[in-house]
Amino acid sequence: MKKEVTKKVQRIDTQVDEMRIRRKDSNALKVIENVFDDATLKTLYTISNKGIIKALGGSISTGKEANVFLAEGEDKNLAIKIYRISSSTFNSMEEYILGDPRFRNVRHSKRDIIFAWTKKEHRNLERAIEAGVRVPVPIISERNVLVMEFMGEGDRPYPQLKEAGLEKENSRAAFDTIVKYIELLYTKANLVHGDLSEYNILIDTRTQELIFIDMGQSVTLEHPRSREFMQRDIENIVRYFKKYGIDEDPEKLYSTIREIKDKAQ
Image 1 (tube, rainbow, N blue to C red):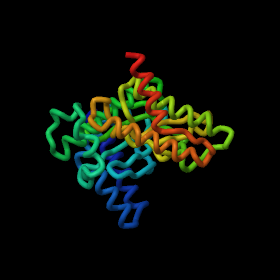
Image 2 (image 1 turned 90 degrees about the vertical axis):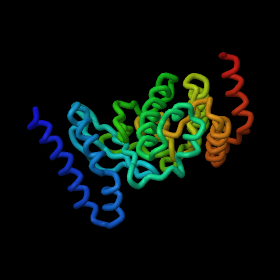
Image 3 (image 1 turned 135 degrees about the vertical axis):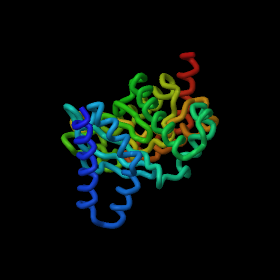
Image 4 (image 1 turned 60 degrees about the horizontal axis):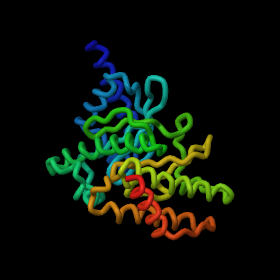
């Protein structure tokens, strides 16, 4: 057993070293160093020892606070989201943390906030799924690492709505689906996405289904700014779909969703 664990540790170390070799430019090297610190490597070892991941792959995306990598699971590809501890700031997190009751008892150190944020994203994804919204299925969260379903085909991630675009004849159905997902989050999951736009929606290239991603910042309705965040989400979507000739009133959409929630209570 000890030999098996050692081999897994060496395998992950080797894969990180290979990333360093392949990405020789200084910016890429700096990102890798910031992501794969000793604590994060140990967390990956822990997850690997549980048989969840077999190998690391290449980078899928780099965000303000986290990096997402492809990983090989037991029988399918997975996505590993790693929130950076050493280089992250609270600039983009703070507005979602302050007022969120789930952070009330969390110590306000960078490490503890990030660990709580990772678990919050895991739970937000579970709540979205329970409500009927298509999102990546979370598998495990440990410290600053979230392992989830890989949204893609083969080793290629599905494109963002911004990248892929839509055929005009499909745009109304897509818009209605997004509004329905916002409604389900609000009425069934008691959540507001909080950062919804054409950049945080993927398109399944096989089925044309839409997928919400990046739900770490999603807040419960108890958050004092949940109304503001939801209105902003709706405004972003309405703005994007205007180019397809869809012209809706964001305030009316928001009021309609609020009424549905009120009637259900």
